[in-house]
Length: 372
Image 1: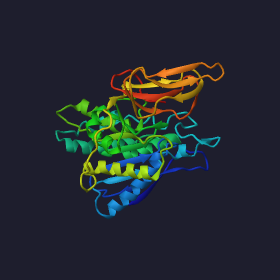
Image 2: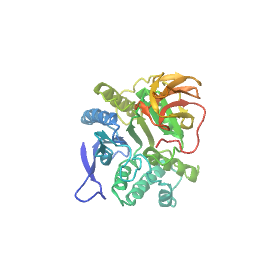
Image 3: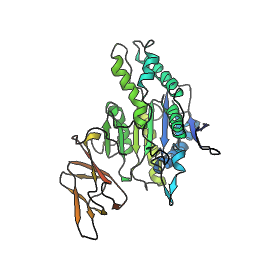
Image 4: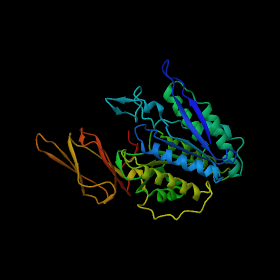
């Protein structure tokens, strides 16, 4: 195992932050896995999963069972980790700019296309090597005009050439679920089964370029651009893994999640060992555009009638928003058949606050699909 330190530039005077990465397995295999946790710094289940994953990786490395370099970044957002207000962590948005830490990653199609166009041939394996090198060069050329940009560049440099990229997050209160690109779903489906994910949400573009899409989108964009004569494979399997809710931080669950991630890597031939027996898929994959997001129509106390993980039907009552002064009750019903998979943990809502999500099979939204 190697430990590497990546100082961030652009911070205020007399302050300095860094990202620390841990590298396991052979670095000359031509295969790479990247796992990061808590890009939203107040989402902590991934940090504990990364801890348990590192314990297992150290053992696997000592046994010579790793067939790829596995890079783990347990704390992907040192900027957000240092933010708090009135004893509450604020790790989703950078306080200086207001930007979401998981948005606005670079779109690399154009610089990569320009670097590989003259050299691309008929061999998809050779073409994949060219793309990975062009991705590394393109990320190295990115500017670092402020600390947040330096953090984004550092994370992209660690992840851009990975065959598998797993970004560990959580929701407010939720069951385990995944976000990934529609063309990647056949390869991601075993991961959903390993983790027991109860929802898998698919989109080609969710909006504002989150980290997982920035890592994988260049591959399918290049494939579409160059066509079958100069084939480019889907060379990065990137997934946002939502590890239930913010309070889902326990050793037994984190150890089980780490084991599930390693089962998936074993299935892909990245770890030596017997192939695990896959459980059935808990719930069919659905388009992200089919996810209904229901917001509070007025301010008040929120009381739920259903729990995350419930299969619901259109018209089912999910929650009430209650005005304790007037006594008015605003019942909130879902408009879709699907899985009630996530809700806000705050039980007093201001008008307009998103409260819960239901994954449905039929598109009900368009445009920007990602949350703020």
